[in-house]
Amino acid sequence: MVTYSEARAGRHGGSSLRRRLARFALVALVPLVAVGWLVAVPGAPVVRAWDAGTFSAADESFLFSLTNQARASAGLAPLRWDCAPAPTGP
Image (cartoon, rainbow, N blue to C red; front, side, top):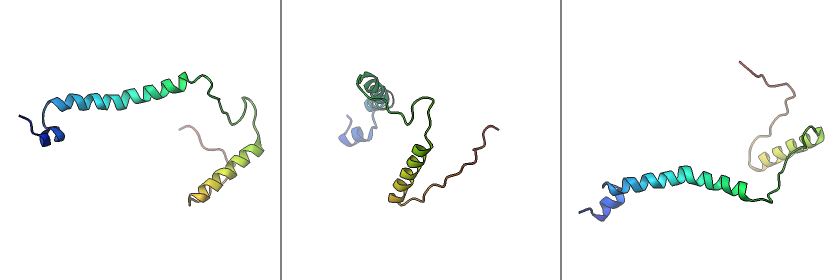
């Protein structure tokens, strides 16, 4: 006979299948439901920073200043603007 404390500790064979199913539900089913919810909501607006093929330096500067304001309110150091291109490739 399995005692209550053994059952809670998972020291009998019946709970291992239950734990595997619970883990599967969390790892596989929750993201599927989330993606399904995003796809299923038909009227959800699409938000983009800029329209395709357009760019606004003033908007980029404004976004940068808003980011630094948010960092300052969180007690973080401000970001520094660097115009040099970042290195790419090996």
